[in-house]
Image (cartoon, rainbow, N blue to C red; front, side):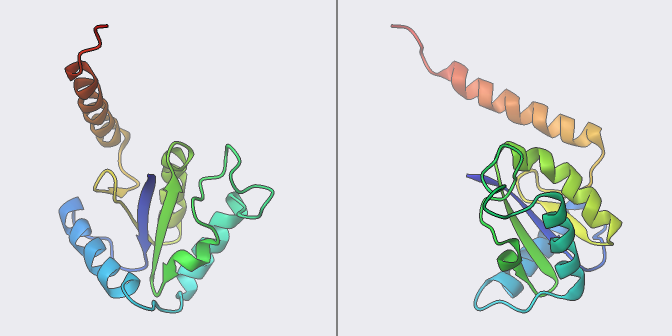
Length: 146
């Protein structure tokens, strides 16, 4: 299990629902089959990410490394980058990654939360609260008596 983002070079969709549709189209077009050579903006973003979080053997798997499957450039195809991150550290790093992508004019879609990033804290906080409430509801449903 991991935390996934799709980052792409293109216009920012009007809303999260439209971004989800664009995300699906990008996944089908660029990640089904052989793939495409990453575009210069995606290569530059990968370089910025790996400068921030190195993917070498010394750092891979460390507590602060978000990478689930390096090398990261292997997850790029055309104008898109699929970020499959380690749960926990990757979830936290997603906030920074989305800011970095926005700074480079790229769009980030959070496949886990189904929203575009960066998103206002009140939106992500609300989604997290709802998610945790669902988790605790499932735990409470199980009888823990001896």
